[in-house]
Length: 88
Image 1 (cartoon, rainbow, N blue to C red):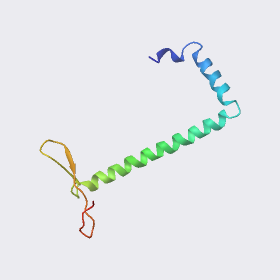
Image 2: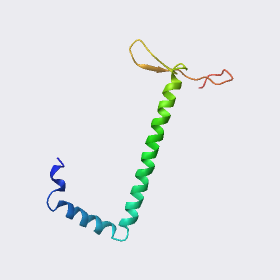
Image 3: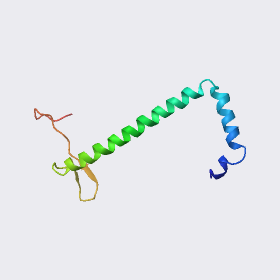
């Protein structure tokens, strides 16, 4: 579907439209901002994976908060307040 997008004059036309829309003076700032955003995103993904591995190891020690019913659907247990009153 997108195979022919970067063949022939298409990349030059796309580049010309981008320059016309944003202006040549703003393009370096946009590229810098995009690079910083991607760097932050990659760092957060890496941190999330390492936290996920830690939580998986800890999950083996604690019981799960939800149970499975006989029909196979997950049923979440409602938490009750510390004073023993039910939420309305």
